[in-house]
Image 1: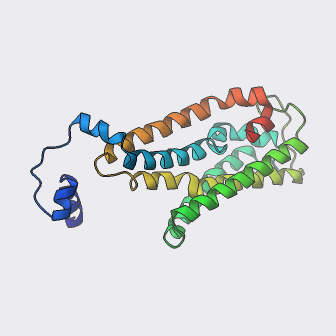
Image 2: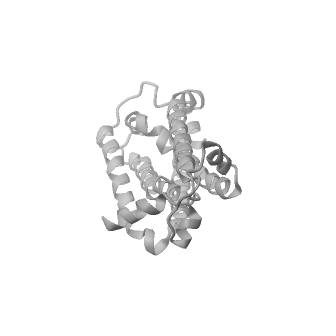
Image 3: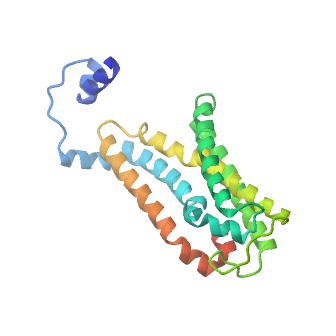
Amino acid sequence: MNEIIRYSENSNRCVACQKGDLKCTHPSASAKELLRELYRKRTIKPFIIVITMFVFAQFSGLASMRPFLVQVFQTFAVPIDASWATVIIGIMGFFANISCMCVIKPLGKRKIALISMVGTCISIISLSIYSYLVLPSGTSSFDKHEMHTPNNYLGYVPLTLIYLMAFFTSFGLLPIPWMLLSEVFPFKSRSLATGITAAINYTMAFFSTKTYFNLETSLTLFGAITL
C-alpha cells in the first residue's frame, strides 16, 4: 500500500520535481501542451514501434480468422470435431501467455517478439503451401462442404499448423505490445499516447475481422491465408 501511495504522489509531480524529490507546485499541463507532446520525437518513435507490433498482431492471420475457425477447420477436414478444435485454440493461447510470463525475464521482450514473429510466419507460410497443394482450386470456408472423416490423417497437418500459429501469436505478438505500451512513452504524453495507440489497435482489430469475409470470398481460403 505504501508503494501505491508513493507512486500516486510521484505521478502527480512533474519530472523535474520527481528528480529533485521536491513538492510540485507547478500547474498541470494544459490540453494544448499535451497535444504538442504527441508530435515530439520522443513520443513519435515509441508510437511507431508499438503500432508496428500491433499491426503484426492484428493482421497475422489468426485474429481475423478467429470468428470463423469452426468452418475453417471443417474445410481443412481436421480429424477431430471442429468445435473442440476451436476450444483448444483458446487453451493454446492461455498456455502461450503463461509461457511468455515465465521466460520474459531471462529472454527479454526483443527475443520473445522475434521468436513469436518467426514462428508465426513459418506457420502461416506452411499452412498456405498446404492449402495450395491439398485444397481444390477456389475453395472457400464459406462454401458448402462435406464434413470431415475420422480417418483423414492428413488433416493433422493443418490442425498442427493452426495450433502453432495460435501459440506463437499469443506467445509474443499479442502480449508484448501491451507491455511496451506502459513502458516506452515519456511521462508527459503517456496517458494520451497510450489511449490513442490502444484505440488504433482496436480499430485495426475491427477492420481485420470485418473484412475477412470479403477477403476470403474474393481470394479463396488459400489467398486469404497467403495475404
